[in-house]
Image (cartoon, rainbow, N blue to C red; front, side, top):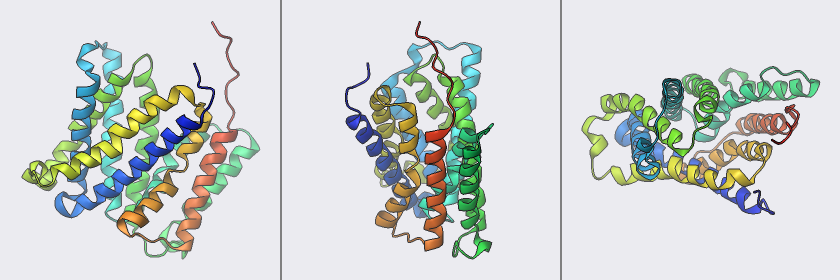
Length: 288
């Protein structure tokens, strides 16, 4: 039953986004110690341990099709995190999140038909073009970082598609299995990058903080909020992630953006909000 007021779930979703971007900033602080791959492995492995212990997926039996969906879901999640954290080695957090957002935006606008849909596409493309280093607006930004962030965005699109298939008829245990699969994908890269430093007692507390802030806590907050908030409003709120990432990068990491970079990010955010708010939805089916 939907809560009479959506203020509380909106606040929970917003708080979850703040935790997510704060966790990403803390993860970047791990880079000098264990590298981007090491930070990815630490985040996913510790988050998987927490989620598996909380949701105990071993109590549920999955058939072959469900396992296939979960493995694909976890694989793209692992690749998405590896690409995203690798991008953070080269570009500011806010720009990386904005570029990564092109993935879910492409999914939302796939099969666009209405003229207004093409307005959002044009706005997103213009924002993306503004962030390219050879346009003269983006400032000193690494082409490699842009490429890695776009690869993360492509994986995010796959994460949405496979996540929907894996989550159909499932529950929180599916997410726990997905994160565990992603951890298994990332762990070899982390071991190759950082080796025994991954289990250094001096590093584990920061790694656990990253795992809790980036995964466990936001997921728990979303679990509480989602039943009481319209899907379209949730999508609009999520569109603010690049802005929160830029703010987190500025406050925690001291990353400053040029006016051109801010304009490019703003265009992608507006395109995401517009697409979420106006994209055609199926006619509501009669209640059984």
